Image (cartoon, rainbow, N blue to C red; front, side, top):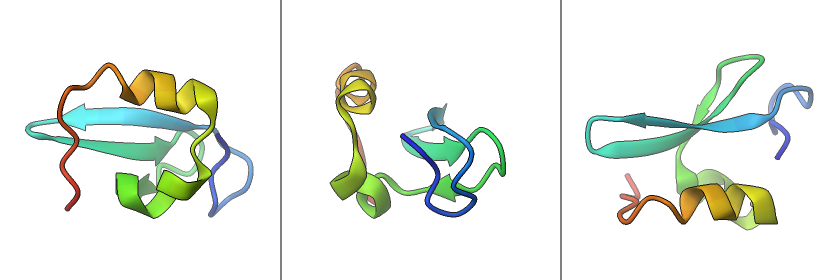
Length: 57
């Protein structure tokens, strides 16, 4: 999944204490899951399925 800000980097999953965020591996912009939920591709959904709880902040 591509970053909506820089249009170059791929989004990854950043897990920290009690929260999961998506982040751009190029520009390091962090996104709440609900900000990019409508743009998730199959590969990203499979990664997020590994987490049993996703909190929407």
